[in-house]
Each structure stands twice: as C-alpha cells, then as structure tokens.
Amino acid sequence: MIGRLRGTLLEKTLTHALVECGGVGYECAISLTTYGLLPDLGREATLFVETLLRENDLSLLGFASSGERSLYRLLVKVDGIGPKLALAALGAMGPEDLLAAIRGRDVKALTRIPGVGKKTAEKMCFELSEKLGGLSGLEGLSGVAATGDHWETDLRSALLNLGFKEDAVAPVVAELRVEKPDMAEAVRRALKALRK
Image (tube, rainbow, N blue to C red):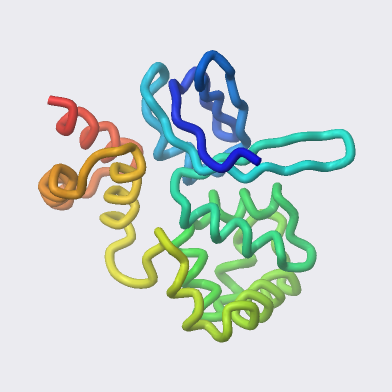
C-alpha cells in the first residue's frame, strides 16, 4: 500500500494531482483544501496517500497533511459517505472547520456541503463522536488543530509537510500573519521567503 508520495508535481487540477516519483507518475484524487496547498508545477510536492482497491479499480487519494487523511478515514466509516463525498466535505469546509462543525453538532453547517443532507449530517455528528469516545476524542487527530487560528495552523502545517524546519517556518508565518493573504497566496509567498 502506498502511504506517502514525494516528488515533482507535474499536473494539478481542482480534483487531481500528478506527482512523479522515481520516473513513475502517480495520479491522486485530491480535495480543494489540498489543491490550495500544492506548490507550483515543477516543484517538489508531498502527499499523504490513501490507496483504494476495488474489484477492477486501483485509485490513490492524496492529502496535504496526515491530519486531513486521518479525518478522511473517519468520514468514510460513516454510513452513506464514500470517498468522493468525503473529499468534497474536506474541500468544502477544510479539516479544522469540519471538525468544529462535528464537535459542535452543527448540522446546518454540515448540510452546506454538496451532497450532504440533514440525515447524513446527523450521522456524521453521532457516529464520529461515538467512534472517538465523545467529542473530546476528536482532539487526538494528529495534524489537525482543535482550536486557535486555523489560517496559521494550515500554513504552518503545509510548510512543515513540505520539509521545512519549525525554526525557519515560525518567523515567515509570523510575518505573513499581519496581512493574512488567502492560503494559496500565503503558501506561495512563504515558499519564496524560505527558498532565499
């Protein structure tokens, strides 16, 4: 099973990314959240991977962080949520906001996800909190912050997952925090600063 890919980003669309590793191109389905954190084409990218094997199909799903992948794995355990809907949920809300909605049993927020109705939203709240021993169990997902500034957490996580060290990342994030550009722009600017 493939768990992680690191290589050159050859293609990216809103739904897929193609990463070349050792001369082999791996196409992964991705969420909008992951798309926003991908580097420019030709740059090195890292994706945490979930391998799906069905009767006649082998698919790879790529995630910008291990926390996003962990949340995906929980979502697909909910009755009525398959891989496509789980990716849509992660892209529509982002991991932190999705966890906050589940933790707060915010059915209304969850029904804003395309394809999620009231019953599915209620199942998400009930089944995920039960599987994790109560809503406080959601705090244990590695790589996904429970509270605080989601923008800063997302940016820091993206840069650390790209291989930069915490002591190099911290001052760059602090500098960008003043303006708080959208995530794609923040990642681009951070990478430019870190590669000087």
